Length: 291
Image 1 (cartoon, rainbow, N blue to C red):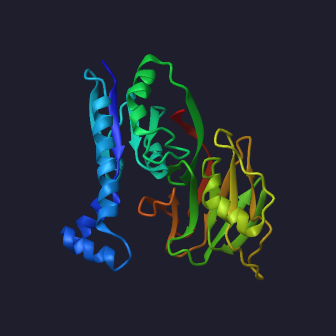
Image 2: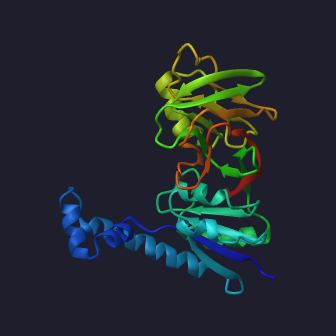
Image 3: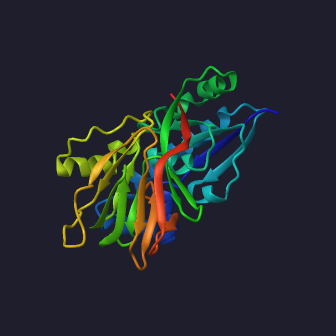
């Protein structure tokens, strides 16, 4: 059976705002109040719509095909022989990566980025290369957080462990046999892909000397955000690397509001209530991105 091409997309800024405001004229007024123009958003929307038509037209006629919106990913069933095409910004690849199991991903965007390096016009050649087995695939490490009841969350960039409101979170942290009770704004565990995002901001702000992993490295880095010293909590374990199968263990001391989420998607989260234990480590899954 021929492969299935699954096109992953998200609404444009124009579509999202039009759905919120109802009519073009109401949207025009809203934008004018904020120094923006309707024509600006509409022009970019039309460019993306043209790119979408071009990508759909590039799919070989004898392939199966499906289109899925970002908001529907948690309900979509991917098959092992799927070829994934993500059309949009880098975050779209991170959104879909957690639902895959080794399927190749082609990242396309009008403005190429690290995870969407190709222009939409390259879709015909890239699809042919994948089908012929001659595409170059770069693998990227992913991170998993696993609760003591078996619930599991995957992420491409990073996972956050802390309080849902980002207020003070209390927990016990354990790494390589060292254990410390902490009160902080939460813990970030990042992959090499996420090392250019949230983790990079933390590292830059605190002038950290920690050498962050590369995207393909089977390693993670962690940062504790704003750890607070007290008679009951410490600040000794605030950053480090997780290599060679090392695991970060955390036990919640939060009565309510404790969460684990990945890649900034706070709506897709695991509960981290009092006494709950979570292990964070390199995931067995890896993103396979067409280079």
